[in-house]
Amino acid sequence: MLESEFIAAQDKGSRRLMIMLHGLGDSRAGYRWLPEALALPWLNYLLVDAPDAYYGGYSWFDFTGDIVPGVSRSRKLLLQVLEAQRQEGFASEETVLGGFSQGCLMAIEVALRYPRRFAGVVGISGYVCEPQKLIAELSPVALRQRLLITHGTEDPMIPLPAVRAQIKLLQSAGVQIEWHEFAKAHTIAGEEELAVIRNFICAGYESRSPARAAIRLGPPG
Picture 1 (cartoon, rainbow, N blue to C red):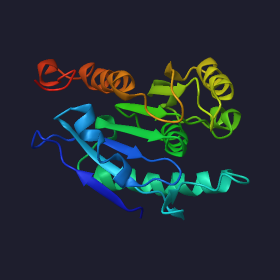
Picture 2: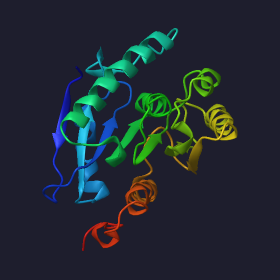
Picture 3: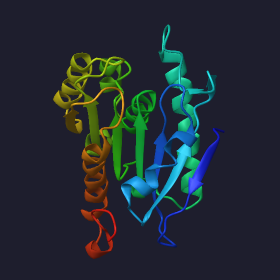
Picture 4: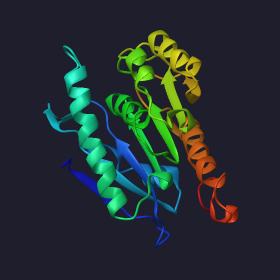
């Protein structure tokens, strides 16, 4: 089982959850700032470490060769995490799956093969593993998943044009992807990008919730 850290929502009793997957060389510690930044008091967080040690952090797969075996292994491990959360009372339909860079790839990989819908999927500055094969293996609910994918126009590590083409391919297959480009490198573009992520998360719950007033669309205050 993967190592993880749970950060409880400010609103006691909430069963809404965001699972966040870090990028190459990072760890769960790298996203402890996220709850305060998103300022959604009804959202719990599960920050997950990738399985392989990498220069003081962790990696989801070996990017220097064939990434497919590592991606497949990590996907199976993440399915165990999802099942464990379901056992703890966090339904998939109330869960947002998010990731940055390698974590973005894993979030897309899991979401489009998973047999249950998520409240949303957030992918930041990543790419897609074998998009044609992924399209051929979409789960029965994949075309009903909501995905937000963001990328930087100045990303030196994962160049934009190739990712844009992958996203268009998934969209042409019917995958619901909200795509945003930001003037940024391989990072998160501050409040500008966080606002897009925040509103996407809220929209996923708001569309299904009769208690719309309970969902705060921005920082408290």
